[in-house]
Structure formats: structure tokens, C-alpha cells
Image (cartoon, rainbow, N blue to C red):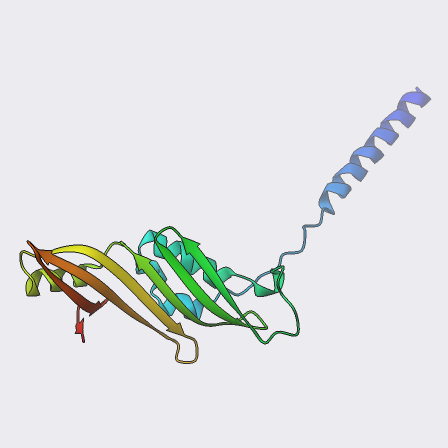
Length: 170
């Protein structure tokens, strides 16, 4: 009987210790890193076509300091990101701040404002080629976006420059 009591006391102690050990589980350290929201807001990341979003998200989240080419002696870095129908040349400072980008995409989905403006000004013309260019400047906090389109009507061709609002450029 005495052995049973000792066994029960030991069992209760072990059970109590195991519940305390579960209560003391610590989680790993979480590092929160700011994404370049100024850039994503300026280039209208949410309204961009999918291939454009991929490269812009990559440029916004890229960390220069984890690159194999990182060196404290350099003042800035130029990094190029590619996909089959687009590329981004991004300039970062030594701390990883995105300074500017030059982006070029081909054959992307055009915004409704662009297609409407083309259909109104050039009825019966077809868009046969499109190039979407974006230039972001962090100092200004804005992105310049434009489309270069090749229009065809039979054997006639016209090159048109237009911004994302559907306004024709020179």
C-alpha cells in the first residue's frame, strides 16, 4: 500500500512537471522588416498586371545586405530582376533603401483607360505590340508610367505613346 502511495505521488509530480514544461515553450525570435511601401504605392502595385507585380514585389523586398556581393565599402548597388516579358533595374543605397527603378515590360494587359482612349481615337486599328515603361524616383516619391504601342490598320502602322490615364504623349 505504501508503494502505491509513493507511486501515485511520483506520478502526480511528473504530471505537474510536464504541464509546467509545456507552459514554458518559447517562440523563436521574429524579425519584422519594412517593405518599400513608398515604391509600391507610387507604381500602383495593386492595379498592376500579374507579371509586373512579380518583379515589383521582388524589387521591393530585396535585401542588399544579404547579397553575396554586399560590401560595406560600396555606396550603392544596381540590381536587375528578369522575367521573360519584363525586367527591372533597381538602384539601392548601402543601407538597402530603394532609390530608383527603370522598368520595362512587353505584352502586358493594358488598363481600361488606355484601351478606351485608343479605341476612341483610332477606331478600326489593332494594337499589335505594347511596351510598358515605369520610372520610379524615391526623392520625388512618384512613378512615371507610360505605354508605347504599335497600332496597325491593314498595311498602315502608327506608334503611339500614352500614359496609364489614357492621355496621349508626344
